[in-house]
Image (cartoon, rainbow, N blue to C red; front, side, top):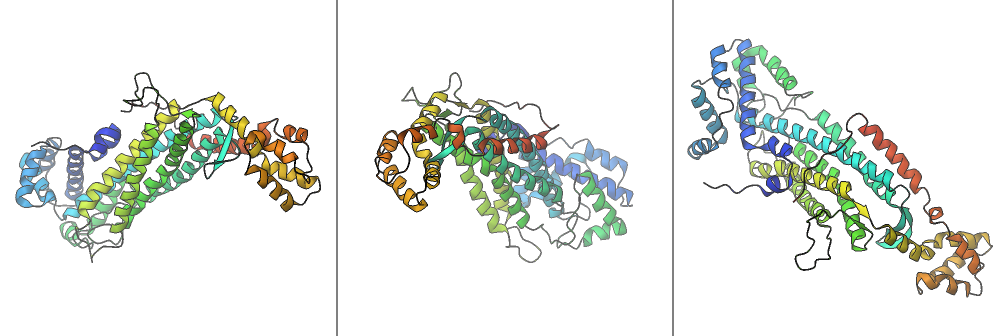
Length: 460
């Protein structure tokens, strides 16, 4: 039987992220979870021998997906099929004592989610590292700043990278907090009362749950849940992934706009083809990919939101088909998005002559706020000066703006005074450099001791 691969896993995500949700690895982790509980149950007096445990340990890695699928076709129950398979391989029937299916699956999924969140946290640190390099590199690259995509005032390219980094820092802090706070579901049974586990282990049940929590790296478990943990947790998790992606996605859009104006390139390697028809083209295909991935993440957020607040009594499985898609695919997408963005940051380049040419051309218009202040200092009313400047700024080109402006009878400045105003573009950049330096210091403090370089695999 041929299996259609998950395109997100095979085309975009890194091997480290794919491994977390790999179906074989998931089954191995489930088996290790069962064995962990077996050992704890043995200590509490449940009739489990060392040979029972050894029999299971010897076949932990023998995973036959086709055999498990065959069993599931008969049982119509995925966990029962995996129990039968593990028992058949070991020749023992001791796992899953006092447990329900969700005692296994809910905890394993949370373990996967925590591991994936930790990998995303590492990817975020890597991204911040590369952003920091670009903040420093382009600290004093003065350029036309745009609002509404219209030339507005002078900014620096370093500040653009700094704005991206600061937004990502904010999201990173929230991500770290979630990782620390995320609870394991624990052993709660069919309706959350842990009745079956208590029947099997008595008072030792609480020790078992505490041990499991510690062994799998969690700080705590839920105290009172039903068969499933609240799906609002999944929504928070997916929304955190969207928040992490937001800064790179906005920057990718900016890079696309810059590339379209001939100011920058996201990188174009030897052998790369921009267009099959037009040899001259160097399309921003990686930035476009990032923006496309954001559409997926927004969709997953909507899907996760639809599950939140829709729990029946102590639980049901209506969420199952959605979560099978949303949880792994959200992580595949963000992992691929960050890897793509880091590749852009690593290969990013500018066309400095074009940047300077555009700045020189637009500077007369970009200086209008300073001209307004100089007019006020010369004694003309602010609103009167504003109307005069607007009149010519909206009806002339940057090259003719000054000459037509001084022809206005009531205008208080000379052509020579206006030209002197724009001799140094840096004077129009406000605190762009200082702001970038502050963000650079913030990023440096966050990544210090955690990373010294970033190694990336080639993108398709």
